[in-house]
Amino acid sequence: MKILLIMIMSISFAFVGAAQNDAPYKNVDHVLWVVKEIKPVIKGWNAIGFTSYRDLKPVSCIKHGLKDDKANIKAAEAALGGLNVMWIQPINSDDIFSRYLAKNGEGAVALIHKVADQKQLDGIVSELAKANIGKIATYTIETKNGNMNYTIMDTRENGKYYLGFVIDERSGLTALLGENLPNLTFNQFAFAIKDPQPVSDFWASAGLPPLEVTHGEIWEKAYFGKPANFDMNLGWQRHGSIVYEWCIPLKSPTVYEDHIRQHGEGIQHFGYATSDMDETIKFFTDKGYKISQSGGWGEKGKKGSGRFAYVDLSKIGGMTIELLWNQN
Image (cartoon, rainbow, N blue to C red; front, side, top):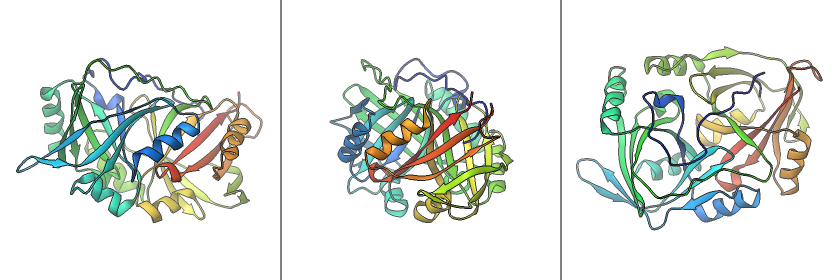
């Protein structure tokens, strides 16, 4: 919603590629996203024009701890208009994925940064330990093209999502380019939270910028197609190639409050730029998806203003996307 200058990402659309530089926080390599069943999620996203994916089968997942145990999962990766995701389907396992699904339902759980090697990872983990942030889980996902070694940090309770790192040892893969039929471009990670100050303080302790909280006037507010008088504050972090937006509901009804009630605080939606808001809304509504919340900001019709509309895609993986349009 919302920022006058949309930050366009500089990350590669490929899910694999060159080694990460010395500043992994600048780019999110991919999102770990827990779902009940992968097949209908892939089918659903394909039906709305996002067709760039790879089913990682066969795949095995080793959970490292006091002893190494197998975590039973299915996995697939996709490039959704520039947003790289790893869909995880837990299968009768006691792991971070199955516990999240049981408690919170389907949805994005972690933002994963790529690191070059174990030495770089050890340095990052050592720095986070100074802020009393430790590991909560380590996994190795074994594929026919090589291993993906994950380290997940214990940040969800205070930071509202899991911060994670991956050493991706795979080779010989074709890049997923992220073309999509509605021609959307990913430009925003967004979270729903109740109180911004403790979240801001936590991420500042980890070396990330504190939240810059703003309150703007919104016009033509609608909630599921009906006029509504919702209100919210927005917190901003601009520490990488994609902006982080923290949505703090003030007055209901809002999709942020809905998400907190249904899933808990955390990653609530992904933002996408569109060049034609009305045509893109029609594209999704023609396929049976509802616009859950919408409105505009700035002086209507003037440069610097814009419109936003949330598309409820919860039936294909539990997430929402936000369409963003800026007046030129």
